[in-house]
Length: 492
Image (cartoon, rainbow, N blue to C red):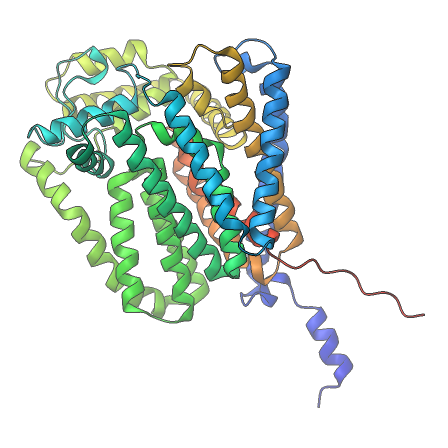
C-alpha cells in the first residue's frame, strides 16, 4: 500500500507536461518555447525604442515625433483596457467590438480612396480580380510595368477570386476591398473566439477576438487588398480542427481540417508547411493510430480542394506547377537582398513565368553557393526583423499619405502594440506552464520548428509570421481570462 504522504510526494514530483496530460519529454520543447518567446519580447521592446527614436533605421521615416508617440501610447493603453474589459465585464464585448468596427470604418472614410503603385501586391490582387470579371481568368498581365510576360500562377487564387465576386456586386472600387476585408476580419475574430473557447472557455475566446480586432495591423490594412486576414481565418480553422481531435476521431472535424488546409494552400502557400508541422502534434500527443485515421479522412479533402488549381496549371503549361510560380523570384530576392537588377533580368528575358521562375531559382542558387555566409547572415537578420518588428503598415501608408505625424503614429502604434502583446504572451507562458497553456505551447513549438527548418530560408517577413502572432494572442487571451491564484496564508 502507498501512504498518503508518498502519494502527495509523487504528485509534487510531476512535471508541468505530465500535469498537462503529456509525457514528461514535452517539458524541453515547452521550455524552449518559453525562452524563445521571452527573447522575442525583449527584442521587440528594444525594436520599439529604436523605431521611436531612430525610425529611419528600419522604415522610411525621419526623426522623432513626440505627438505621435503620445497618441500611440494612449492607443496602446486603450487597446489593453479593451481586452481586459472584454474578458471580465459581462456583455462589455459587444460595445467593444462595435467600437473596433467603427475604427475600421473611420480608416476607410479617411483613406479609402488611396491609390497604390503598380509594383505592389494590393494593385496585383485588384488587377487579377478585374481580369477575372473580364473573362481573362486568373491572370496578372502587367506585372510591375517592366515586362510583357503574362503571369497565370504567380499569385495564389483564393483572395482574387473572392475579390472579383465582391467586385461583381459592388463594382471595382475601394468599398469592395473594404467590405471583403471587414467581413473576413469579423469571421477571423469569430474563429479565434471558437479556438480559445475550445481551449479555455468563452471568456478567453472573447479576449482573443478583442485582441485581434484591436491589432493595429488588422485595423489599418482593412482598406488594402491583401490575403493575410483570410489566411489567419483559415489557419485558425485548421488549428481548431486539430484541437477538436483531442476528444476522439470525428469525421466532420477531419473533413473540415482537410478543406481548411486546402483553402489555406490556395490563399497563403507559405503557410502550407505549417500545417504539415502541426501534424506532428496529434502524431506525438494523440498517437499513430488516431493520427493516421484523421489523415486518411483529411488528405483526400485537401487534395480535392487543390485538384482544380493543379489541373488548370497543367493544362496551361503541360507540367506540374507548385502552388505558385513565385518560388524563383522569392529565393532570388532573399539571395540578392534586392529586387532591381537581377529581378528585372528575370522578369524581362524569359518567354513565360515558369522559365523565368526556374532561371531565377538557378541564379539564386548560384549566388548562395558563391556567398553562403552572406546568405546565412541575411536570413538570420531577416528573421530577427520579422520576429521583433511590426512596421509593414508604415510602408503601406507611406504610399499615399503625406502627413508625417500620422505616419509616425502608425509606425509607433503598430510596433508598441506588438511589443506589448509579445511581452504579455511571454508573461502568460511563464505564469501558466501547465494544463491551460500546454496545447498553445505545443502548437507554437511546431510553428517555430517550421520557421527554423523551412520558413526562414525563403522570403520571411512580418506577414509570414502572422500564424505565430495569432498563437501569441491566444496565450495572452487565456491568461487574461484565467483566475488570479493567490498564495495561501501561512498557518500561525
